[in-house]
Amino acid sequence: MLKIVYPICCGMDVHKGFIVACIASTNEQGVTTYQSKRFSTFTNDLRRCAVWLAKNHCKDVCMESTGKYWIPVYNILEATCTIVLAHPKYVKAIRGKKTDKKDAKWIADIFKHDLVSGSFIPSADIRQLRDLMRYYWKLTSFTVGEKNRAQNCLTVSNIKLDDVFSDVFGKAASAITTRLLESSEPFDVTPYLTKNIKTPVEKIQAAVDGEMCAEQAEKLRIIRSHMDALELCKLNLQSLILTTAEKYLPQLNIVATAPGIQAFSAIGIVSEIGVDMSVFPSSKHLCSWAGLTPQNNESAGKKKTTRISRAGAYIKPLLVQCALCAVRAKQFPEVRRRYLALKKRRGHKKAIIAIARMLLTAIYNMLKKNEPYDPELYRKADRPPTHREVSVEEAVYILQRQGYLVTAPPTA
Image: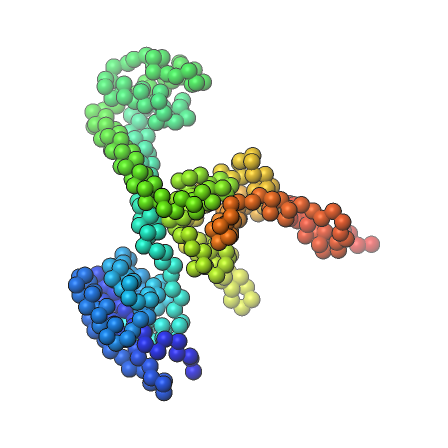
């Protein structure tokens, strides 16, 4: 028989307009009784739910993460209860036998045996910082989308600025685009060019020889005004982010010492993983949570896939960008050496994911020990031993770590 870990616990089925709570109380004989009650998601009714839980001596609550609907419930119950937020795939009931009351009862049943693995929920301040940083990344994505639309307007109008400028939204290209929107008459591009442009003037003059209709011109004006508004929003949001992150300045300074991580990237990493590393049992758990480890998908002794998981939708791209910066930096040769050794055997994509995991492992230990990045630790690990005898298998392993392909010698 399964052990009862939580004698008194509550399972919640969360919806947009209401929640169904089921308290499971197990006595010393192992008999469980259930109480179910429905509450609306208005704040006053959620407070009544907290009072009802306290009246029944229930301190442990489990609910599934349904969209954003769990957040108002979490905000009210966080102060008085220990909440386990579970992914829906871990608490999903059997199809065909699902009602709201049965779902809440099923969650309470599996939770009382501690069969539900909870999600990582940081503190309230980190949650606010995370929300601001994710909105900042969304605004950046909106800006990229508008740039693509602006480029499409120029392309369909036979204006080939992308063939002669490395940045269509640079100083010279933007000045030429502004002149094109002012008048459709031919003009000389020479006054608009800067000194560092290497493309011949004749080629640039030929690239602006197009015809932009009134509709495309007006669309381009709207796009450019929207881009300016987005940049203003990003500046305002950036100042708010810096103000919110000010209380974590010591931890941010430690994270910023890692290879390839600048100040704003450090804020993004801290907003995702927090500053308290005790919530993760080890660095491997953190890397798995961030989606930087291979999946376990094995059946009948065959591994079906070893791809990384889809987890870490925000932190994983950020760490990959930091890893790309780190492998190019000359002041961190230990990172570049490891990247090149992996790239020879596994290719660029797997090597850069490995470097991203290496950075996250370093960040975990830096925050846990409250120490800055120490490159000497990696250099010692890469340095071969001076006086040691190795077997053939160990010699082969050392050569493979350096990127060599080792084949077996021919037998006599």
